[in-house]
Image (cartoon, rainbow, N blue to C red; front, side):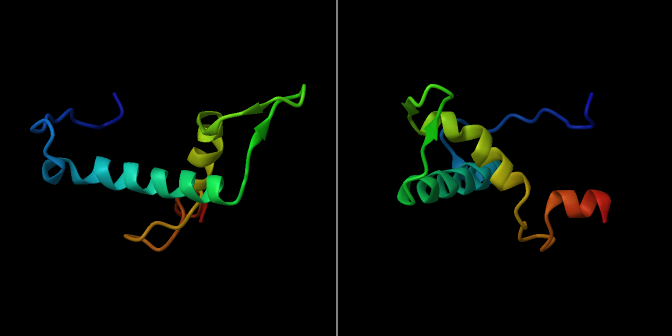
Length: 80
């Protein structure tokens, strides 16, 4: 559908699934930075939620950051 081929890897063997492990590592680093700087999410009623509610912001931070293979962010590569 998206031009991707489903590939299976050996369970519990991170060496065979490098790209997924790299993404997970990057996401963990962003979450750590958010938590270290005391960034918290408060809803419209002022209630504080835990880090899992920050995942949309983490995804945005990752998707708009520069990536090492290209040195550019995905939006820059798409629009120029």
